[in-house]
Amino acid sequence: MAERTSYRWIWIDPIIITFTGLMSCLSVIMSLFDGSGVKQHWCARTWARFILWISRARVTTVGVEHIPLNRPCVFASNHQSFFDIWTLLAHLPVQFRFAAKESLFRVPFLGWHLRRSGNIPVHRGEPRKALRSIRDGARRIAGGVSVLVFPEGQRNPEGVILPFKKGVLLIAIYAQAPVVPIAIAGSRFLLPKASMRIQPGDIHMTVLPPIETTGLTTRDAEELAERVRAAMLSVYTQPGPAPHDA
Image 1 (tube, rainbow, N blue to C red):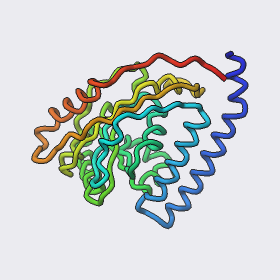
Image 2 (cartoon, one colour; image 1 turned 90 degrees about the vertical axis):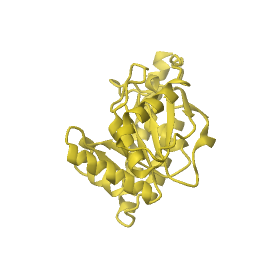
Image 3 (cartoon, rainbow, N blue to C red; image 1 turned 180 degrees about the horizontal axis):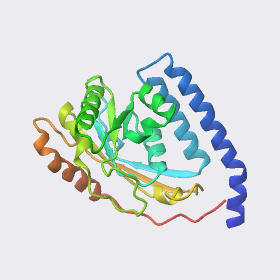
């Protein structure tokens, strides 16, 4: 079985790399004519759906009906693997922008494209820059586009939901926008943090009802973070790894 799995990746890896390059080029070209990020998000969604399909990732979604379609929100998801990003891009039915760690925006060319696509750098340890990021995210929401955050602040391959950093949820408070918690399970088995080898498997994504922030102030950020995390934990279960089939 292991030999068949290895043989499969001899031809799948080059396909993934080639398709990623093609969609990246298309997204960059589109960004030259569209600074809103709408077309770039379409490219990212198409790319993510392809990755999930060719990787044989079986995604089950629950609660997608909780997503507000008539107003923007802040999506808050746990983070175990790159497959979280592909799952969210492929299965959330609305446009959104990522609030991502600032170091990604310092990578040559990638950082320029992330900014051009409307994504938001998250600064840690620098209060003025952090406040600028929060206000930038709130402006995205005021402009009608949702923002997605990973409040754990890092990928956690251990299968538990870490305590949240309250800073990124200030975006929701500044914008007075609802927070939609999302719990993802199983993704860590498809692409472990220390590995570059993708395995087939099951991913479960649960979308929970929005948590309103109307009337909240910055003093309520810690309580909001606890409520969002508690909502995720109420539905979160970690399945075991799927058999490594061909």
